[in-house]
Image: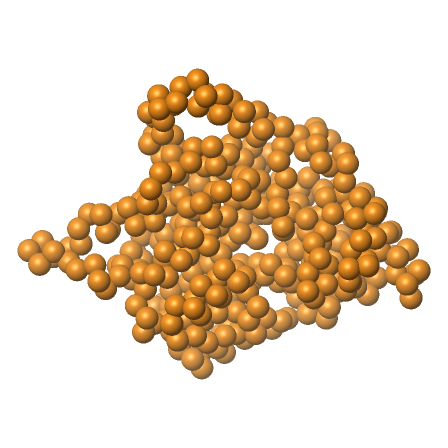
Length: 364
């Protein structure tokens, strides 16, 4: 771990507990980026001659990393753009289930496009609330974040399996931006039909890259009704049935997507099982300490499924106190968000808990 931490210069200056906001740049990724732009500087258009095969390599790396079909990956500058393209292809008579307070790029994108919408509450009974909402409102699509960006509540993946068995026709569309990279995950084995992710958080890919993964049987359901089938051949024109044609218009940046590929290779070298084990130890220690200090809301304490993100009771004054102690977190409307990733340590969590305990003693 000491060797890995040396890759991240910011960790020598700050206690960085803010990956839920932004992953950190590291030395070998910076090396890749400098070499990339040097090659572009010297080669101009010649540098782009192999871009098609390079980007295909990015797709294959993503597919391998998430155990997804190799032809099911589309590259997008971020997850939000991919979701909007997806929603624009759906019939407006389909009812969509959303989670209250989910990421605005999900909820606003759906509610602003004229779909019939229903909601499930996000609390310690999340799975029960989802099930009840589906039974009551009978949505045809459920769009949700695997991890809630404000509270850190993590949906039970086994619950999604059960949900899909009971409601096989419901389309499950998940945002994994606050999930992907925190633990091992098989898209093929999951109940999720479409998974989107931006690469700048837990995947450490920097900004300007993201992707969508598709199960092979969902293309027909997301093809716009305005795309008429060829009456003679009985199928859609190739440009409409190609995922790349639908979701990758225009040129793709080898700098940004190359950064994502480099980071996936980097995480693979560390090992997803090692990352998951470290994250489990960190979040367990953090949750226990925050609970002892009385800083966690009841739903966080009661949840068995929780992520590497926690929202604690705090205001601008406390947030500024943490900054003064070189502890980086996020100030949110409902508290202070703290998040840990594999490059963090138990010692850093203890330092945070000590500062929080001292500050609480002073202000109480």
